[in-house]
Image 1 (tube, one colour):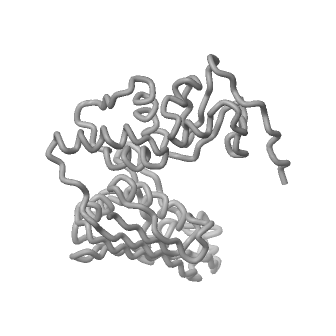
Image 2 (cartoon, rainbow, N blue to C red):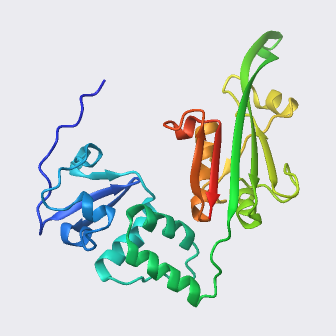
Length: 271
């Protein structure tokens, strides 16, 4: 068991501060981070405020924040410039709004509302998103070739995952299908329901036997960076990303609210 981090002295004004936001490093100053004193960042780095344990410098003296690293670029630019300056065609305003709400930067939330109004983008309508995941172990028997004329009966456990998604927002449901590389109607039902079934191939199970059993993996990400979904945590992480991008808030976690990615059921709402 690693010892708890040793509290460090808070950073000083005028000097650089390095943040690790979801794995992405950013360097800035305390003046920038505290530009809006009523925000969460303003409270975290206010002079004289004790550093929370999770903000004590980690390896390399970085302050770690477990949020979306890509979106934080625009958060930081708003703190520096005092205005919203997004690239042309930026399509993740829902995610940026969720991050601005987390950091409680009210002027940024106001700027995002003005931007959406100027684009003629209607405010997100109320919606519900529910994701359930179940896993069933299955013992698979197969003949393994050990020599030219030597076959041996082997067995291995294969975990079969079944996920059911229900969403009243058709755009978000379409984004879910796209995230998991599933065309409409392929391994999915019509309406607000969306079901998936996959089984990661154990290393001991030959590919030919894996295919003969009708098993298939599940992939996510774009064509340039596909990632295999090997279990419940990686699946729910992708669901969470899509939900935040579409303005949903996490409402309930089952069975353990403290262990989100190892849960079996997540419920999101959007007012």
